[in-house]
Image: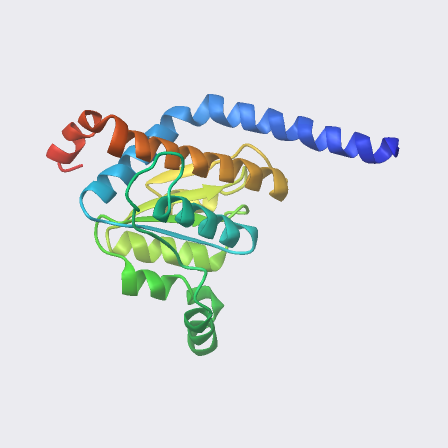
Length: 206
């Protein structure tokens, strides 16, 4: 058995556990707030859009699937869409207007006032994600950013910024998917387990 390889596994696991624990200690209330905003959007007939690049594109598709199919509860499908999946749209926009606009133009086409856009960028500097968030702001969507420790550039574009306290891309992504799962879990709570908790927010027009 390779002791060096084992040491790498244990070190990665240790750092990942530390970041995850710190994140959920500091951000649990924020996750509930974001999940409630998503639940209000869905209860009013809106939808959730996701975008990101590379591993964050995969996370976008993963989380959209959790909403459209199910997470844990047996419940009706919920409208969510990853803006990362249609190769004809992505290549047409990329070819005609540039890669920086591949998500922005989809937000223009699909985003309505009150919908939620989740932009995922571990660096916080992905130009196409920032462009999508700007367009979502213009169209009065609720904007949610998911980033790492250095992602402050997303802050002014986001109603809610999920900032993981780490710099290593892989570790940030691991917490992103855990946070995304928690959002799915709490959205289901508000929509299907504790509907009365949502009533004041629906009545108040928030």
